Image (cartoon, rainbow, N blue to C red):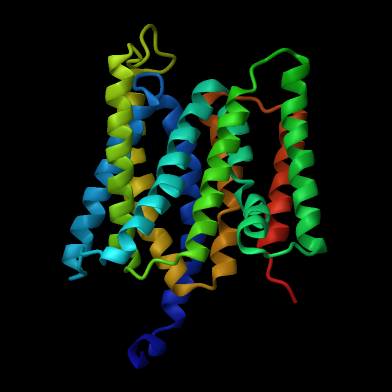
Length: 304
């Protein structure tokens, strides 16, 4: 502790820089996955990404001398957390992009902090105050701005529904861990959750192939070298490096600062979709982004 305190200024500055870095890593992962979806199915992408991320984090845990053993009483908690926070979130976000706009899926997914408020009320009896009810109202209004133009035009709402499912699954995992905390070191705990997620998506991949739901076929909208760039970024930067940066941010910064930093992710994701994928969000999309980001910021802002 004294050694850490003597050098606190520099690590703190580095950690503050890590917040926008994390936003870039996770924000650009959205257009990267969209590119991969032109070649691979959602199950295949998630199996490779989660599996490789798990192997890298297992290796890092061993290098740091951390035990990979999980106490018997913690195993079921680890599995439930993995199913909600890893499997549900990652599978739904991939199908959300397959079913609709990447920008729109990013916006809806990061309404997660708002749904934590409602789930915490239902599960833990944490009654929302006026500030949190305001955030819920803004989020619902933002979702309406995203969905109503699609419904009026007769377009599919599948992308928004999958993104909302991802957000609710992520929120459910968050509330679950508040109720049933994991007494396992964060690095091996995350490695195990990624590994569980990879096992589930591998099973889903096998079932999908057996039912004739293999990878997409036909002309690809991007050159083949984009596939390798997107795959490398997704596996090495978004999954492996992204989680390592997140560990540093959580360990060194207050939770509110770290959580508020995630609000930069949809902004980067929408901008990346515009610049890299050629998407052009509508006025309703932009208004929805503003309202949902404001709703999440209100929830994450510490009270007086």
